[in-house]
Amino acid sequence: MADRNAPFAALRGKTPEDLFGRLATPCYILDEAALRRNGELLAGVAARTGCRWLLAQKAFSNYDCYPVLAPFLAGTEASGLYEARLGFETLPDKEVHVFCGAYREQDFGELLRYAGHIVFNSPAQLAKFGPRAKAAGKRLGLRINPEKSTQEGHEIYDPCAPGSRLGTTRAQWDRQMTPELVALLDGLHFHTLCEQDSDALEVTLQAVAEKFGDVLPQMQWLNMGGGHHVTRPDYDIPRLERCIRFAQEQWSVTVYLEPGEAWALNAGFLASRVLDITENGGVVNAILDCSAACHMPDVIEMPYQPPVYGAVIGRPLEAEAFQDCHSERSEESVPSASKNTDPSTPLRSAQDDRANIYRLGGPSCLSGDVIGDYCFEHPLQEGDMVLFGDLAIYSTCKNNSFNGMPLPNIYRRTEDGRLEQLTEFGYRDFKYRLGR
Image (cartoon, rainbow, N blue to C red):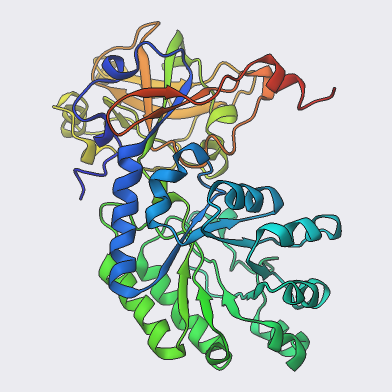
């Protein structure tokens, strides 16, 4: 599994220049064969447990690739009206689930046309919209907050943090949930994880049982949310399946899971080229034609440092680490995620002049438009291709045109190896977001 789903395994032994050298950069490449491998792995879990998988479109919403995932999907998960419509229109035979922190009155009537399962964040929202949705034949859920944080280092993504606005705590339930509101519900939903293994799900599920175990027997389904890194090479799938079976047997519920990353993990690239190389205070900067702030926002927000082909993340501190930079390429040695290094730390000294260490950054005016520090096998030169891995997720659906930066075009690499251009972005896409 590690070999099959490493960040650059989808290159199938070819170099980035061989495969993508003719493409104008920056550009995204989505790999359908890698998407299918992820789907097949998730389908195996469903076959063994009877769980139902949803695609969280907030992480991956490139609908041209949905036909590859469709055989493995029960449906899509949306965070609002537009994603719900996208799932409804592009996968018309699948379920459409939606959760939003709060629904708008002017959107809700249209939302009822697309979503079959509607999850509310609070008893107040359930009371306001639930009767109308129930009358329309929709299946209703309430997001619960088990108040059990399993996050370390990703506090911005922790729905169980003190004071969180997401989910209904047991104290809120006891104060606000009347028998009439409970009768509206078909299921409960929790989402507490972020890029985590099934041990965190196990801890969360125990908290759910303690806080809401008396309520769940009244429900038809339980949605365990997203953040399950199931297709990561070292993910503990047997533990996940035990968690699913526990819920099924304990409460007689249908179990839904709605990951985003797991579907498209290591299934896409961002190809870029070096525009310039500068040096300042011992730091060698390689300025690329792609931008962290514009084209991979999670690099700054999470923070996240994507793998780069032919490089390792950070500075070699030991001779052995330095040798790793120059050894035969091994995708397994390339970290899939790492925190950014301190931008104030010099990377080079008289002792490591021979190391090809570069701080990769974008061409924007933002000083913090920095992707991170990398040790390369060979020195970089102007015009060299730099290929980032694991960028199918949270990239094309989150990018922006800050600084008037052009949006990278998106290509699909089909399972027989063909490259198909899916977009033709240009000046109009920048201009018409801002006015007429």
